[in-house]
Image (cartoon, rainbow, N blue to C red; front, side, top):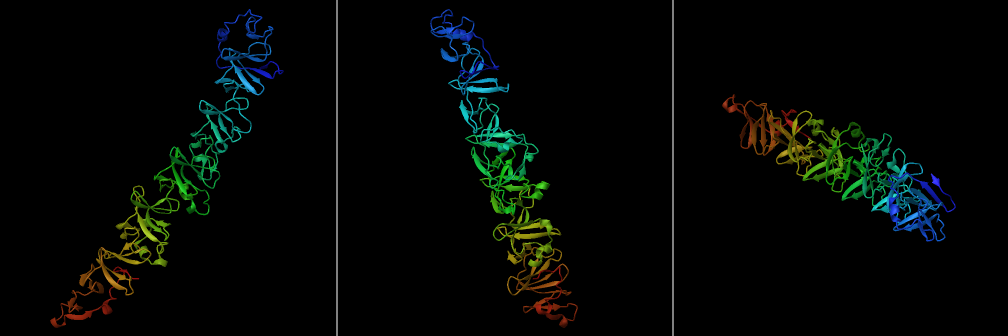
Length: 546
């Protein structure tokens, strides 16, 4: 309660203090004084209350007097004020149970609302106070504290003008935070765990805050919260040598996020970064993560919780829309950074085109020419194959590899660059074998031989290949799995005949031969491509004829 009068501008507030000492200390301070002294100026305790008498033997009122190193205040009745908070003008002081003015110390006392509150009194005894319309802090023992206009220490969230933020989601509009001990958070993380269902949405993280089990805020060297200035671009800051991203409300962006939120038209123009966990938003240095994209990056994956592999660079950027080398192996990443497996078609400019699971197509699909092909973009982009076991590898395949298609197993060939041999619907030959869209043109294993029309030149000559895809060289008479005889001359197909006897060669020419005929009639007509080349060319035998 307030006591005294207003003539001297002094208000005395009786306070309930945490600790109270007796009068022994002040008695000891004044033991040298004689209570019976009435003519000399000094302290007097003859009435049972300490007073200070002037030279006229009158009690001094509403004034400060010093004894030893301590200051004391005499009230309007002349008695020493004890155990009270007093206000003189704009300044507030605290006098302890002995009456000594508090200096350079904390005091826990009752506030105007009759609640416990902490006050701090400086070297001059004045309580530290705040200023209206701004955050005005005082430094005490190396830490900064905020006090209201009455001198009560503040805790919690505060905006730029020094107003307490007490709404349902204070993390959004707060600028400063003062801990339960009153100290301002400076260069310090704050774990914010009171995330409600109506916490709102982060444009930059593209996530509802209600999805966060907890959130992290960071307050910089000046105590201000790190946050993006708009939803156009997130704020990146290095903290203790590690890079982090913060959204428009100052929340550390966890997991996959957008460097820029302006990606409504296309997801390919977003710069994506990654912070590993909700409790660790550090931008990872050259880091693999298996996670779910956010809803803007891929609504389907987000809804179905489809996980994909993502890879970051040393500066925390997610690799996307290209083929990149990671630890000596090459991987394909789509427009939002998902690692791709199976058949991948990259566009001419090196960006991602489309991917297909290996069992999505049949062998015949790969042999169908450009405009008629069911495999979109196969005639326009560069075809690659990436390991189908995405949980273990997913790296680029080179050389020859057996692939399980929808209808059968087939061998595909890839250059050291990873590009398919014979990509873009063009016949190609490598190491004596023919390929079309990467598919090696092998003869049926039961038939043993097959026919390929070599359209790489304008002649379009036919070539015989074996079950391993290798072209038959030289001049030979071969027998296939159906008992037909295949004539090869100078590495080129001549004919496939169904003779009972093996054809004979004489003077560099091939002839039909019938061992059951009379000796002079056994040699038949000459076998030529013109006469016999179009016979017995069933679909099982002809592998490629464009």
